[in-house]
Length: 281
Image (cartoon, rainbow, N blue to C red; front, side, top):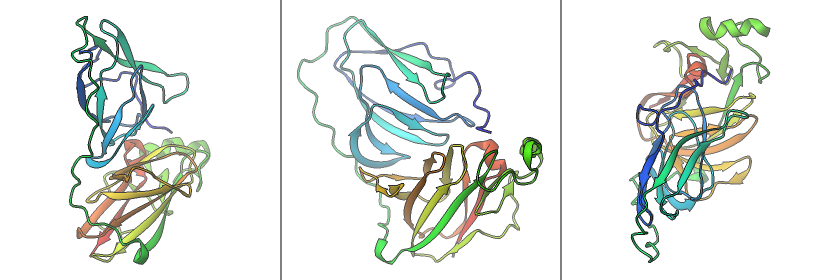
């Protein structure tokens, strides 16, 4: 029910054993999780990545010890190579219990550090021209993620163990009690009709016991808070990773007219129901 996470992870299409680096250099990385369903939790041994953008939207630069990256999510990093010449440092993914592995190794050449001087502080990237939500006048809606074994709403379209067959033949997952299966269909009514130019706040609640990276087409949104606590670093995104039984508040200005998909980016979840349409008019 977590989706087909596979058993081989590649970097740019190949299995990676090592990435050559030099002591003292600064690297910018864009990490893109192209997996069907695998969520990653990356730890860089001996290094502290500096996050500078999420889903292509600049944020306040901040260090992290562990990077959570769900399918469709993108994170831009600055990585200062402060390791020792000649040493190897592993990049470890330990999201799944008992399935920890190392994705690759940062392999330092043996030449001395290129500079003993500290590198300049990293400045914030220029922001993209996104409309700022008017939180005081925002219209609020609840988005509830439901279904799956042991999850809120039960197993739709099957029930009990029969629901496992439903993954291939019918609805297992829902958003606000509705399921859009397969590739969707044009005559499905929108879950919500949003007024063009108005600010909206969505409270997304994951009532299931599974992780869901929720992706909104056509928009980036401001991540306001999680479980009632404010999110730091002024984060914008278009995909938000929802842990089991948790909530998140997001805000955006509905300035892009049309019908836009809102769905889980674990493909198995999407095609078996966790997908819907928002109409902006």
